[in-house]
Image 1 (tube, rainbow, N blue to C red):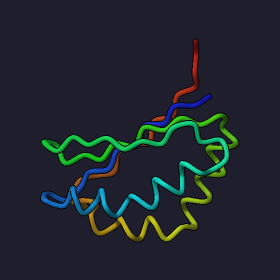
Image 2: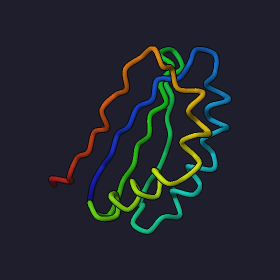
Image 3: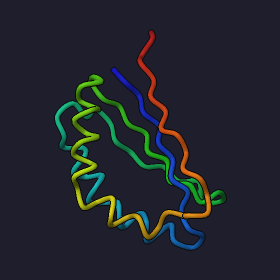
Length: 97
């Protein structure tokens, strides 16, 4: 089992529009094979969208990465990502206990 944490810095004042734009992405991902959890949390003070994901295996996560890369969802949310802030690394953790 893997836990993934992915952060996106959102343009100031665009959080509500961002959350609306990612709704389809979140709903589609939750239906993917191997997805145990796919939730989005926000830190409005820091303009952060934080994806907390749990996947059954690395193979399922890899398939998700391919699906995500080929989907129109990334283009839909791109206008809300703050280009002046470097992207955060995606964190992937294997369950240890």
